[in-house]
Image 1 (cartoon, helix red, strand yellow):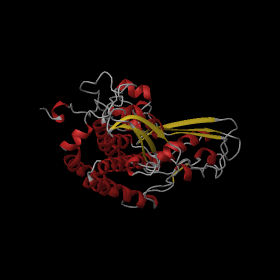
Image 2 (cartoon, rainbow, N blue to C red; image 1 turned 120 degrees about the vertical axis):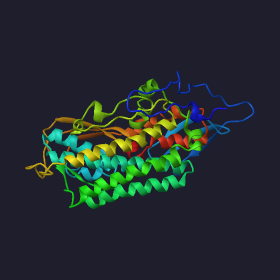
Image 3 (cartoon, rainbow, N blue to C red; image 1 turned 180 degrees about the vertical axis):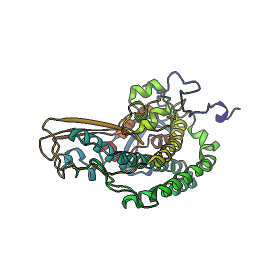
Image 4 (spheres, rainbow, N blue to C red; image 1 turned 90 degrees about the vertical axis):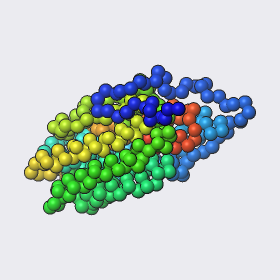
Length: 402
């Protein structure tokens, strides 16, 4: 009998997807009916459950161990960000985008808000600040993916892998602590640039930390990614074709895990990403294994970007001059900005009110879109598979409920 390893094509490449893609990967309604001798029943997974990665409630209909129906219930973590923004000045909003949405990617939340506000207010960012935004954004992507992979390992019973991922993440979080005094919510960005210049020796320590993380990854692969038990639990589980991923609105690593090579840093470049060389990892089968592998390889690509940016970091100011303390946007003026966060495309839409406050903010969260496809990914698989499937979506509930 062949093992799953022998049938599975190497799933992550840096170009077009390789290997066959099943014709229909998302189960259709009616595919799975409760058997006559087993009565289906409902079970609540969450809202307080470690496998739901936050306050998420999954009303699950089971036939034995098989999931035959799933109702995703959200709204337990509503933060009112968009309404709060209407009652704060433009600089004050940064403290809320930092911690009320995707708190595992605070750098990206602040960055996309600043991009929108700077477009609305006509503020130009200095070159050194652009480099620092890219450096901190990619380090934050690495730390977010390490937490995601480690938590998935913990969900699967690989406690050592979880501890190793957190040990590597600690090296990166310590860089943020040196830079701005915070480890999770940073308030590093400012309208027109960034708030802090790196302290003496920080660039060298950043090089060393990134190098150490990359050097550790082969050991992590041996322990978890190349483990036969993980292959059995992930390969061919919760497959999503490229066409279905596009149709259902999958985001970020979930979309790229299905072989769709779409990354805003490449396809709609913002800031100075066009200056850097990096690849966009994609999968082949779009299963649990591929989505995990995409995040693993994205850590390597982010490290590649960080090294280039650190080597080319120019001198100069870190924030634009003559930015008003309380800027005013013209009434009715509109601006929208988007960027590629660790969970996919996030966006911020602002409307000016002729005052120091916006009339309207609309936030687009990647986790919301990924969580919406969870029923399509889960029907027909087991309850234990469901926990891993949620882990590969990597949702942050603040990003879902806002």
